Image (cartoon, rainbow over all chains, first blue to last red; front, side, top):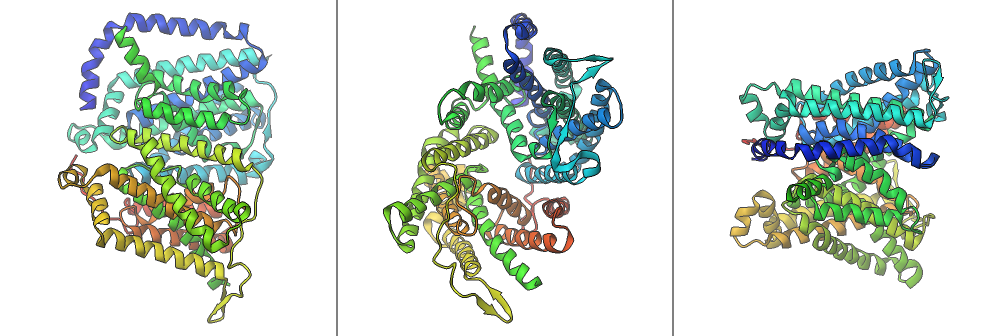
Length: 322
Length: 290
């Protein structure tokens, strides 16, 4: 039913496209000007938000559209980070090229992660992907000759064609990747693939009776979403300049999933809103003595109780009223 | 040596199984995978510690009161947080329990701080039992006995009491159950209360062997989910045996194959089993028509 209503609604949404375009342009202008008004720490938080938004975009294609839960995205994020770090530092490959190579490599691993998803659903899939995340994290940890293991991996400033990127440069580079990611996710979700994924989420039986090869689409969804996570991971490695296998744990995977659900499953704007909520709100709460965790947790519960469709659902609701 | 490892694994598996059973009872009735189960148990354990340390009750007085506290806590959480979420998207409810997890964790941190405490146990210094030539610590015996008692008790409760029958009906078909006069919201409250109670027992039993702090249950929760999925979430005995298998496998793999890859190998086994049997070892395959 939901798919049918979504498709029916998509026509009407065309009407409010003008408003959407204005809002998008406004957000973009704001994002471009942001470095002017922020100190170093603020810029760091904003860059981190963009990086997480890229992961959330990819995960939303997988979880929101195709309905497949993944608890191994922190590991994909980590593999991307380590691949980029190793290629640039030990292989002498340029930064941008190693980002892409690392992401393609991770996409292959993502496609392999789809194998359990052929037969598993819901909680069973969650535990299988959680296991996969633990295995990948362990491999990074124990492959000491390549990754330095628990000692971590320190990185210099990122460098493109001989120029060192400062914090502002990295911010704009991340912004470019976020916009590319938005454009990609928009195309995937509006096209044949997006419709196929929505039907697979509703009912695999219906999908296969319509001639949709659900196995192939699931593999594609996992691979695309791993690709997004790995690009974000490579950018993350050069943002924090020190990576450690411990940071890519299950908790981070759960945080990614929370971003997508808080923002709104199956919506592109929701991925951005969710990432902003998850990164910026705890930063704002840091001022409150003793209880940032308590307030953040309460907010999480309240948002889910009052807005089961996520924050983006609220935005949409308000936009439709207007 | 190997017998020791197996007994130790079974004892650890029984603790996983208690948390696993708490999770499955809630999951079956409300379809919600409760990520706050571990922290609920942690709070119950801290409450028991408070009774022992500040109020000065003996272990045998404090534990039943703490169990009651766990039950009430589960019911309150269900009424306040979960009831508005029933009928909405399941993943939203799961993320809400995750938020609850954070709330309970920082609440416990505010009240008791983030330092570690040693939780007493009346069984620690007793001489070990000898089964054949294998020494079995009294702690392990208590864990195994409690695990068995809970799985058998819960199975009997679900099978032979009116409340249990209502719970099973509500989990199979909420609409028809409601037509037959079963109150869905009361069933859900009972499930959450039982979950809180059983989880609390697990917390009190695990606390003496670890140190009591706010992260007491974090790893136990993941293990309980993994063991439950391995056994199959349809039946309590499936969950119980899956968790036992997980405990034994962890110990054996850690000792004989590779200590550093122990956890990874355990998960490889779980994934392999799930690929062959997607509903868990003891799970029944439900035919889906939708």
